[in-house]
Image (cartoon, rainbow, N blue to C red; front, side, top):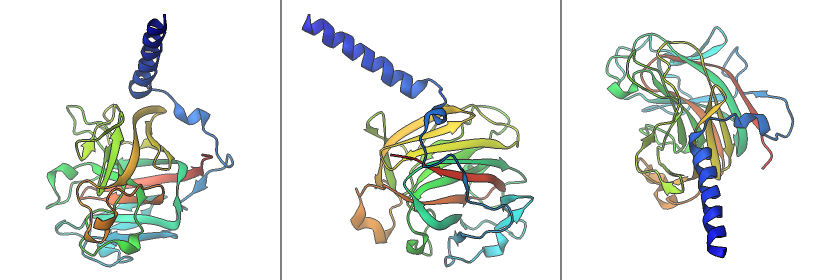
Length: 269
């Protein structure tokens, strides 16, 4: 009898785990926040409380006006560029670090992929979670240590999901096992047209993180820590350290993109 009970419990547990990982559900409806008011990180008018770091330049230098505000959105623009030349960029919200939170924003790709940018960066950008302090980034550093919510647009054919996970200078676990690849795809559909796409992220420190598209949870992972590839030299002694909080940033990787309605709620642990 005891053996039969154990088998039954194992079966129930397996069904729960499978459902958690593969069934779409609206996790946002049951969140408990400090209050029900959204805090807007971007005021729609200027880049107050945001700082820019572009590879090859000091923090605060907005090379060729890469990041600008237009029509109520933060726009990544390459109209003043001749070639990309590995000028990966990030714009950080630096007013505070976040630990447990519900982040929501909309993004939209537009325009033409910049000459000289890597092929993989076509309709490719990202939201960087638990970022290192931008003050600690090296001049030639491509990406901050972070967990990246990779944002992709479809190319007119084939599947190309969005809200994937990439791990610059970090490791994460999926299904309790370390992710083997630098980027892991979500289960989202592909957005071939250059329309606004709403993405949400539910973060409980380094314990569990959910990526949500159109109210569907498309990816979950746990245990963010420093490691993997691209750990900068000034963080090599911190490999294995858990990332329990950090800054939020948005990417410029070679394709024009816009971000709007950037808002956040602090969650109760």
